[in-house]
Amino acid sequence: MSIWEVILAFVVVVLMLVALLANVLVLMCFLYSSDIRKQVPGLFILNLTFCNLLMTVSNMPLTLAGIIYKSQPGGDHICHVVGFLETFLTTNSMLSMAALSIDRWIAVVFPLSYHSKMRYRDAALILSYTWLHSVSFPIAAASLSWVGFHHLYASCTLYNKRPEERTQFVIFTGVFHSLSFLLSLVVLCFTYLKVLKVARFHCKRIDVITMQTLVLLVDIHPSVRERCLEEQKRRRQRATKKISTFIGTFVLCFAPYVITR
Image (cartoon, rainbow, N blue to C red):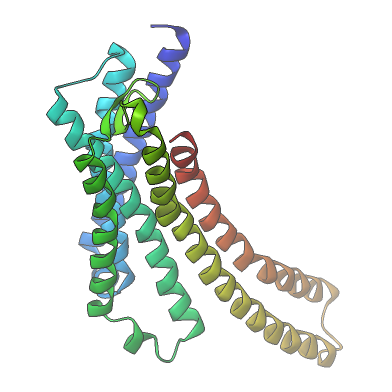
C-alpha cells in the first residue's frame, strides 16, 4: 500500500468510528428520553439514525477492505446486496433530512395548526413515501445489473460494466441524483428560507420593543445599553447561522457522493 492508501484507510476508519459512536449516542438519547419519543420529528431522526448506522456497518467496512486489498471483498451476491443498501440508505438519509425540514417549516410557519397538520400518522405516511422513493432506484439498478464493485471508489455501488449501455446508465444516474440529492436540497432551501423569513419578522418585532425600552429608560447604564444592542445583533444572526449550518452540513455530507458518482 502507498502512503496515500494508508492515509485514506485511516480516514475511513476514523469516519467509521465517529459515525458509529455519534449515531449510537443519538439512538440512546431517543430510547432514554420520553420527551424526544413523544415528538413527531423523533420518527424522522430515528429513521435517519438507522440509515446512518446500517451504512456504517454494511458499506464502510467493505470499502475499507476494498482499499486495503484493491479487489472486491466477498462474492458477487454480497457486493450486490451492499451496493443495493448503499443506494437505498443514501437516498433515504437525504429524504429524511428533507422531511425534517418540512416538519420545522410547518412548526414555525403554522404553529397554531402544527399538531393537526403533523401527527404521527402524517409522519408515518411521509416515511413510507421516503422508503418507497428510496427503494425504487436500487431495485431498478439491480434489475438492470447496474450494481457492482467499482475499483475507483473501492466499494460496491452503482456501476455499469457494459459500454453499450453507457447512455442509459448516464440518464438513470442523472434522474436518480435529481430526484434524491437535488430534490432534497430544493426542499431544504425552500422550507428553511420560509423559516428564516418568520424568524426575521419576529426579530424585527423584538428589536422595536427593545429600542422603545431603551428610549424610555433614560437612566440606564451605557454598558447595559451596549449589551442589549449586542444581543439584538446576535439575535438577527442566530437563525441565519443555524439554517446555514443545517443546509451546509447536508451539502458537505452528500455532495461528494453525488459528484463522484
